[in-house]
Length: 514
Ligand code: ADP
Ligand code: MG
Ligand code: MG
Image (cartoon, protein in one colour):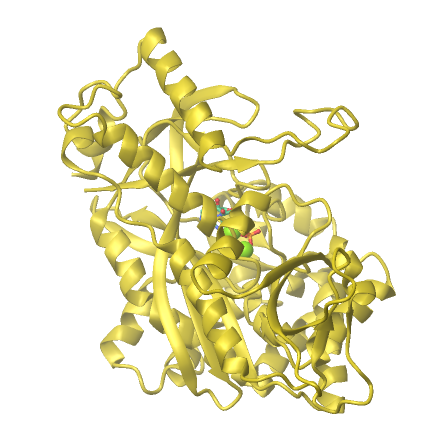
């Protein structure tokens, strides 16, 4: 079945058809904010002195076929996944045991844990946490030819591209269905006549999560009371700004919530916690309006997920400052740590305590097993372990990926590189890494991508589906808001190991279910 869907898709493009599609997509992207700021690889440093330029986000010309059963299973499981990661975050002791393994070998994880310990010592003043999550999958082809949903990873911080992926769905839908009648935008193909990509309410879902936190914060803790706002904490040189603006605009225009953006480097200058107020409200003073002060209900982090963002102690001080405030954090340090690859490996362990069932006690057993079925085999590298044997043997390493506790793409070691890479570092550091079996997506899928420098690439591809979910819970595990909605399909050349869009490996895509 899968074989035949992929074998003649997408249809061949004549030079005139390709030119038409590329022009259409380029213009549509800018007209509709399916855009990113250009990298220095496209516009040399200093050439765009005023920072006015934008280019299309990398995007596929065709939507990609994706198995309907896998798509539906991923959306059906998202709310349980939300609950799972909320429950893990609540279990400070369990998380502490997992993190302890990493602390000696991973400074980044160790510093994050230290932020938690410092705030815990003083006492947290906010017991609500917000998660804006994205669970990533591939459709794994089994030896029988059937497909099964397998999780690549679960993201608990800065889960991006909800804003742009909804736009790609709109772009492909318009290409498929306007003008009315048989598609004139694409060459004839059965898949392009019968379906449009499923709706993509990622912006609505993610904004509704932020709005739920904003409301749950309640009234101002300042005397006299201050107006309330949501604060987006962003990276200084962020290129993916339009994706973020899609969320802030929805919050402002639909939910009527004031939203501000602040670079992580400016946190200590532009926000404060009055020492006289034991409730520790986080106050924000917009530099463009120095006479107004807002109280921050919710801190949404689109920053602070990578060690290179913490250049000095001042950056750790800023992170601690946010963490100890009364603002609801999306995510808290503990929630960020729950997204460690190590946690995902421990959950997938077939032997020993059944952590997954323990964290999902109230959930129907059959559903818990469906969550478990999405796990691909993962291993630690302890001495005498199966993981170590698999990783050091070039033949078995070939079917694996080695992952550190990092986010944002570009950090993994693949296949035959694994044995030598491991041997190049002290054995004592191996426990900072997990080994994961490679998921095996359809081998003959193809698509055409328009990269953000205008290059058009056609070839064999691999698609990765991400499903968005939001959850608001308190430290006792009580849930106030739990929703799934919206997806990201990212498609990359088959020869490319890594997968991030922002990291330059993939293109944004949408799904034609079959
Ligand atoms: P990050 O948090 O940096 O995004 P990921 O675990 O998502 O880390 O790995 C990055 C990319 O590596 C993925 O987008 C995917 O393309 C590839 N990858 C990761 N794990 C697997 C796997 N088990 N099988 C196949 N590809 C994988
Ligand atoms: Mg990730
Ligand atoms: Mg990833």
